[in-house]
Image (cartoon, rainbow, N blue to C red; front, side, top):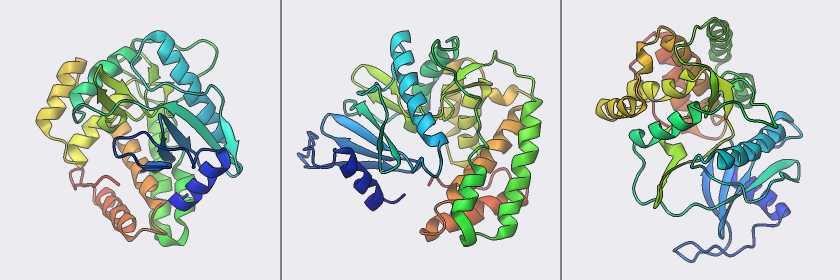
Length: 298
């Protein structure tokens, strides 16, 4: 889904003409993110447009669960983004959710800001009223590879499918160090906003019930692959109270996440040469067995 299509859906949902109240005084909807979803700032709201759920029915269910998670976290007192509407709209086949817009951040987020939020999430029991799924880290691989189509080498796609199957089996056999339960699922500093009242968790659609280690491997991989300062990583582990790299299963969850990250980039390859180049970089490093080749966020 490109920005043009996302704005068409936003218009169908009745939001595109709203006047924004941001500091620049911009009128209309302002695109603030375009990835799995298109995210727009619209006045005092944030509107998230998902991919077409007619083609991918699970995406509408995921949007409904994200709204439910927001309500559950609010009741538990966890600082997190709050839904402005309890129902998920459907516009031209796309799920549309509406959120309260957070205040502008007072400073950039640091990895250590994430740790206390994860500790609070990891202390929660399972929610009442709805069920969190397992963390299907590898669940999107096939969809992303199909979206890549002929833009990527079929041998690379087959290689990633084989990795997916291998790591799915290995992950199922892991013995956790932490007690399994609710996890954020994509625990990165970009999913935390440091506002005037402190850090707030955002992007709740990957909330799951699974190994808590899923949330901690994310930053370990960022340290090794994406150039995260080792000192910042150490601050994170000190604030959380444990370093997941001490766990025997770390390499398995890391490998699964690397596989998913490669496939995620592949979906953008048909329309973006930079995505294709990054996809090839990642796959080549996996084929070469080099765990320290630098990857670049996309």
